[in-house]
Length: 243
Image (cartoon, one colour):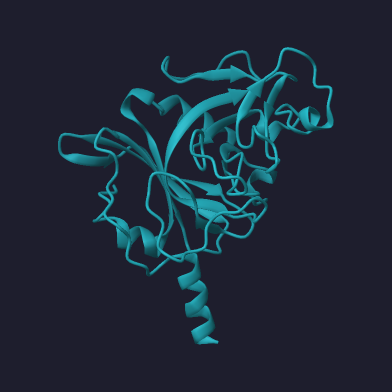
């Protein structure tokens, strides 16, 4: 049994030696997410900002939820260990690694945010494609008519679901380097059942914490999201220049 557990850990990517990598030098904001293990759907989130003396924690940490099956290496800024298992569409795992942050979407006409952060008020004509066969896979599209085809209706972002009434894009497998089937539609959004439910791969949190987080994001400071199991975070903290 011990050899099996060791093999499983290896397949998820923990002990492999990674190529040289550091957080982008221009990144002055970083949200760190730590999970207890690769199979945990719970995460502790901490916000950091970089000053002349290095990274400083801002405020208290808060709780969030991840994919039902935990984490797996995603496709972002970081290198992926050779032979490690990576994110696949429908695996119900959150992508681990280092990711740029994208724009925000929501049902409200406006939100509290930096003037530099893009925000789209979601309507019935706002689409996000999760169909691996679609040429628009893992892309946002705003059409000039009400959805007519089955594909358009399935891709609608507005489904009357409060959990998705506010979201911020996590740039996993993002345009223009999209790999079909490597996972799509990964966001920060509002958690379900007061944190009682895991996700399909997104990172969720309370509505209050999400609003506070989005309000702190400043695109001019190239904010990034670092999501890793605790052991991997400690392993890569020094080499990757993590907070």
